[in-house]
Length: 344
Image (tube, rainbow, N blue to C red):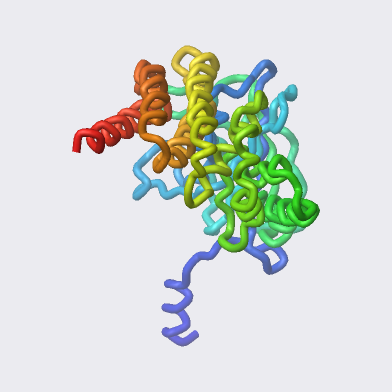
C-alpha cells in the first residue's frame, strides 16, 4: 500500500460505526425504583440531561470528552417510571459510559458493553439489567434501577421521532387555517403561546393572530379581566405583540399585572425543602416580563402602582429561586427607571 494511503487512513477522522450504511444512535431506557418520583429540579428545563463519556470516572472534559444526548421524562406518573435517552455514536470507541442526571435524586453511570461490530440483532432491546451501573466517587450505585439499550440507524430514529417543534408548527398551521374570518379574539388567543404555554416565538412571517388583535383591540379589555387565568395570560401576550397600547386597555392591562403576585405565591407553594419549584418560578417571571414590556409605554402612574405591589411580593424570594429573585431585581429596575424619568 502506498505510504500516502497509509498516512491518510491513519489520520482519517473516526466518524463512528455504521448500521446498513447509516450513522448510528444509541437508545437507553432507565427503569426507576418503585416509588421514585420527579422532583422540582427534574421538571425544569435544564434539570435533566444525559451524555456519553469515554472514561468511567469524572474528569475534566479535556481528559474525558462527552457527547451530549437527549432525555425524555415520563409524560405521566407511572410505575415504574422510565427515563429515555438517545445519544449519537460519533466514534468507534469500545468503552462507552452513559451518564444520566434526573434532578437531584438520580445521578447514574451505565457501562454499555456494545459489540465491536453492529448488526441487525443490535437493533433489538437487550434484557433489563441491573448490573451495568458504576459507582462514582463517594457515590455508591443506588438500588432499584435497571437499564436496557439498543442501537438504531440515525435516519430510522429521526423518522420515528420527528422534532416536537415540527409537529407543533404543522398543528398550528392547520388550526390557524380553521379559524373563520372575523372570529372573536378569544379564538385567536391560543396562538400567542407555544405547546408549553410560553409566548410563541416561532418562525418569522405573517402572524394572523397579531393582525386580528390589531384589527379588534377593544375585545382584549374583557379578556384581560377574565376569571380564566389561561385567557388572561394569553391576552397579556397578545397585548405585548401590539406596537402601541390603546388607552382603553391600560386599566385592564395594569390590573392583569397583579396576576404576577399570584404566580409568585404559586411558585412558593410548590417549593419543597432544598428544591424550589423552578418551573412555576419561570412561569411567573415570563408572565411579568411580557406584562412589563406591554406596560412600558402605558400610564406611568398605573404601572408604578402595580410594580410596587409586585416588587414587595418578589423581593422576599430567596436567591436560590433564581427566576423569582430575577423578577424582584427587574421589578426594582423598572421602578427606578420610572422614578428617574419622573424626577428628570
